[in-house]
Image 1 (tube, rainbow, N blue to C red):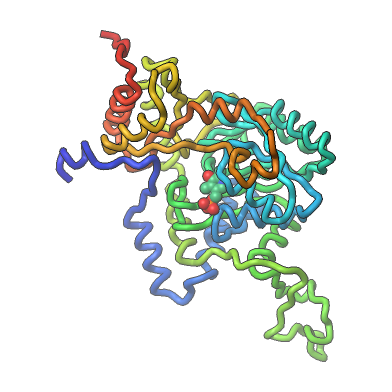
Image 2 (tube, helix red, strand yellow):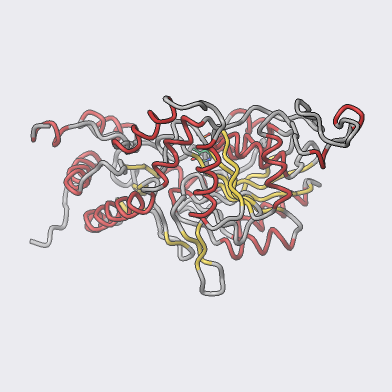
Length: 416
Ligand SMILES: *Cc1c(COP(=O)(O)O)cnc(C)c1O
């Protein structure tokens, strides 16, 4: 690659980091006996559970499928409600609707998009007023830093609701536990389940893939069954004894049973091989992302308050999936679209994470008139800058300089 190439290559807001060991791992599967769910899926699940410190990891075909399965495993359905912060990807809320339950949107911290205990409290109060029975709460670890799990979890449990962490941004992060200790995101120390995504833009890539981690054996068994058509093959669970067993009482070799309906949400061995190979490099990925974030923090410091990093959570040792900043577009006399277009013309991709979900037409019809000022204020200012493992500190420098130009912050207070 020439100097000019490396200086001017297009920088997307996120992308995967694939190396030769990843490629070799996938090729090995292609030469073997199993393409879909086989030994690589089992190996990946064991490695994921061990890495995150959960008893069980149940892999599946996407983070969205994982969220859907979590709702199914909890038995959420029509007449139930779940609380979801409005600043998240569509899928967190959609999963609740997929099982016919109601979504109660919570507001968020205007400076980092995380649901706070007071936001959760207000959402419970709104649910109470509407006569809704909240059975689950979905904290989202936005951008890779963690919400206040100690308070959120205590509040949810006091109200008899399950806690499902949407940890799709936060593999490799740690959250505070209130006792001075920290727990790995995905260990489910303060939750019933945690959801992971292995979409290529996330820290660990499978192509498409997801997982649910849990410490509850009954939830794990239910998740496994629901991801594979609702089928069981364990003799202890068979109901039709006359069909299931021969005269000696042994289960018939062909026999399976379907006690409830399920989906085909399995991960393939091809995807699992890539995810497993990537998982082995997680610590390095997280370290690189943290170093790039620190570089951004340093270079952006003189641009405050017009451009600022999102506020750091006190409850988190983050593993940055996104590097999001807050920009006072109005104060700078510009508009976000203009800034994004200018940056794109300079080879820099940016994105907005996220449009508050309660503002989507589908959810608007279900929640007419709902106003969440924290979510609005976060949305009005947020922009995600490129952050991925293949970036260099020089890329960060170039991005910050171009961002500065694009926002029109003319008087950069240089130390010189
Ligand atoms: C990516 C993502 C999902 C969905 O994951 P997929 O694997 O793309 O289905 C859910 N929630 C959040 C917060 C995400 O970022």
